[in-house]
Image 1 (cartoon, rainbow, N blue to C red):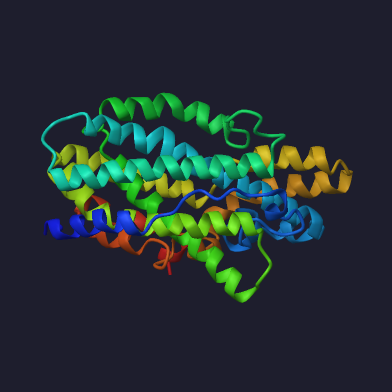
Image 2: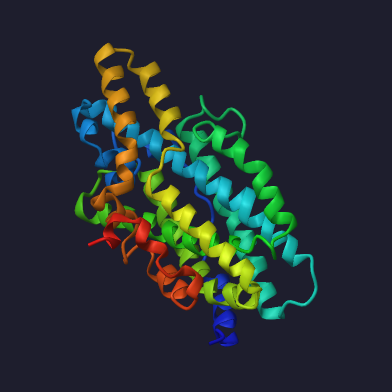
Length: 319
């Protein structure tokens, strides 16, 4: 069933009254003595050896992980999603309402990327003297060529639609985790990081309402072989997300530099050896991929046979 045009008009109208401007954070807003992210969204929190780290080092890991999340947001929104949508917006043939909604979407994603860069530079100027990736640099370098190919041929590499839907919905989950922790544990999070993710939620809540329209316009009419390929690619992507290792090597290296004690290095090495176990960690999968985290993505994928069994790679789907 095609998504109604009236919803696009509602999304466009809301963008004029329900948006935000980037705050001007001070050093005091960063709060070095607090976590910068809810523990539940940090991968190491689910590993046995993480609990052996002193509280000070756990907090520093949490802060570095928060910076890595900022970088991932910037990488996906700025270098991938905007490139692909930019290709389409240059072409004729798109309904005027969808075009306007996607133009607003792109403008807001540019603002989100700018906000997270500003936050990272304020929180860790030593890592970001220029706007360059620090904790996911290797991932960014490997992804650059691939992202460019997708942007050149988005109708062939149409899995980008599902990556966008999946990623956008997970950003909502991240923001809601911040709100929940702030409610349950007031003053436990950095005011600046809390505010950034709270503001991010305002516009991302609208963005996920575009998902059905994107599926209708960009994906539903794709040839069967492309849809079959998309199902295979998305299953591998979810499997990769289920056992994240992208930024952990860089974070561990920073921690070893900042805390050079032998006992800390040994614990960090154990943590790195435990990382693959996240592939079968039910609490981690429930927190990151449960129904509350991917409700819309699961529902939309359920309309297409190529995604049958796609969630079976997760431990929470195995009973």
